[in-house]
Image (cartoon, rainbow, N blue to C red; front, side, top):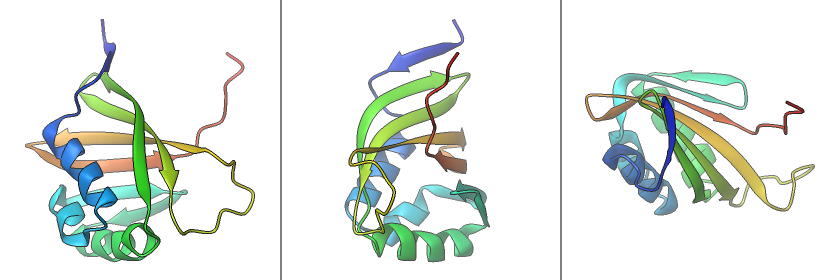
Length: 123
């Protein structure tokens, strides 16, 4: 089996989500490798200083929280579906915003993170 639903998050992903929910920029940034990238809303954010600025403004600044709903290990990549909330502009968003975060991990750090609002598939 190549994919499996899991209940326990890898330690660095658990720390990342805890840091997001604590609105702690330094803790969030500490979960990333120095040359990591984040893709959020079709924007690429490369490197630790750009990630720090992004997280400080759009996660900590907007008081974003993540409530984990599902975790899947797919060939070692971790897929987390979570309910997102916060003080961001919610215009045209559903009342319950479920986003999927795709984490790639190496040596105990996040090397890439893509956060996507997926649409239902007809397949």
